[in-house]
Each structure stands twice: as C-alpha cells, then as structure tokens.
Image 1 (spheres, helix red, strand yellow):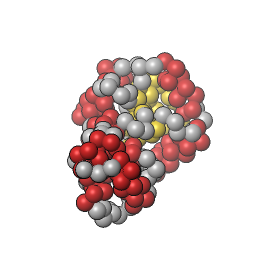
Image 2: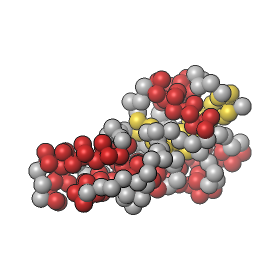
Image 3: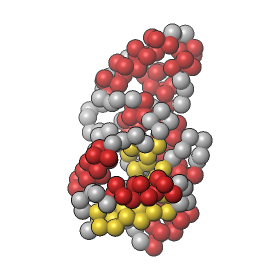
Image 4: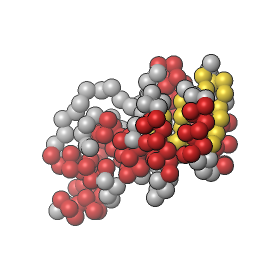
Length: 198
C-alpha cells in the first residue's frame, strides 16, 4: 500500500498528476493540496510515501514548502517538478531537501516509470538521482556548471568568462555528456547532489 501527495497551486496540474499517479502500480491513494501550509498540515496528520511539489519560476512557495516539510519531517520523500531551464528553482529545491526533479514535459510513461522505480527501490531514479561516481570536470566545465546553477544564460556565462556563447554551448555539451544528463536542469540537480556545485 503506497500513498502519494501532490502540492501545486494550479488545479489543472493537480488533477492531471492525480490521474497519472493512478496509473502507477502500487499506489493506492493520491491526495492533492494547493498550498504549502496545507501540505504540512496534511502530511503531519497522515504521512505519505511520496510527495510531489510543483515549482514555478519566480514563485518561491513550492521551494518554501519543500524546505519546511523536510525540516519538520527529514525522512519525507519529496520530488519537485518544474521547467527544465529553471536551474535556480531546481538548485533551491535540492538544497531544501528534495530527492529529485521531474521536468514539466516528462512523458507519461517516463513519469510512471520514475515513480514506480522510486516506490519499489526507495531511491529516486535517473534523471532524478544518480549513483555514478564523481566525474572530473575541466575548470571551464566547472565554471559553466556554476553559472547554470545560478540561473545564468549561456550569454551571461560567456560574458563573465570572456567566452563566446558558442564556446559556452560547447563546454555545456561536453559537461552534459560527462554527467550523463540531457539538459541544464538535470546537470544542476546532478551537480548539486554530487557536490560539484554548492
């Protein structure tokens, strides 16, 4: 018997995720709340196995909810979902104790597979979390990853490092290959968990 709780202030998102969660084998109940205060109150009364919290660019409530929930219940299994290019929110959520990140545009089968893996192994699957050994990044790759973790565009990173935007993109592609990730969001989440950025 596995239970889940969704927190997002958009009704359509809550309803959509609830439908998807119903397709995950082993999940017997999925509840949904709109705000962080409701999340804390509901979890304190009735803890669940998996919590999904939505983040939106420039809307800190989801990240605040993650921090407050983990502070009160350190064993809570929290996954955040948001935009793949919103590195700042991803970093803040992982720093706040979230175990992983899902993109808004994750396919239904991908979401089902990730949740199923999480529930059966009690570990967050790739791309949410990775157990691969630490990789050796060049100084430039490290600088590019740091810039990404601060939410900077390739152009901004290039200006700070006196590099062209194309050169930054080349470093980013090599960085993604080394980390085994597909985009900025996964790179930042992976880098944070592996201690490559802080």
